Length: 174
Image (cartoon, rainbow, N blue to C red; front, side):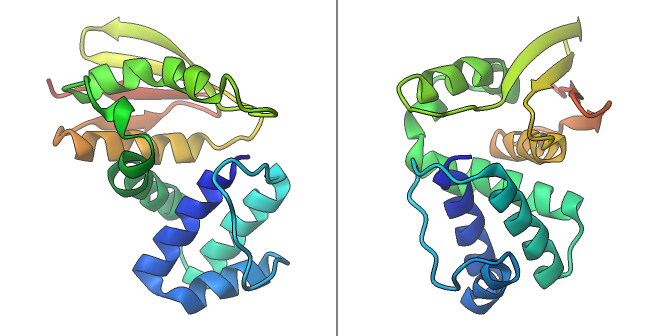
């Protein structure tokens, strides 16, 4: 996984709970309390997953709560600073989500060892989208949190339902 994910997680924990909680999370995951991550750095998936798990334990939150918090923070705080160009253009959650597979392909095209999740789209009707999540990481709950964050960003009430380990249904209000 790319360091940007861990960098964002660290920013979220430090800004919401304090530096000590982030250092405790790193320590509990078997990492240095002073570990620093670069956005394009490759970090082994199992280390990132262990860090997410340890953060949940340190913060006494469920993985679903962590996924929602991460999704909200990524979409509304972290990503606009780093990937601002991708926020220009779409004027709705629907337009934004429809671009995500292309964005992941473009952003990582020239990054060695990048394996971003990919998405397939199936429209049940004009307001109901099924997003198929293609990744070996099993982070479907994070996708749910990210989609909720997109709804917040565009001030839209999205109904987001996980349909399984690789599918999410999104019902748009507009």
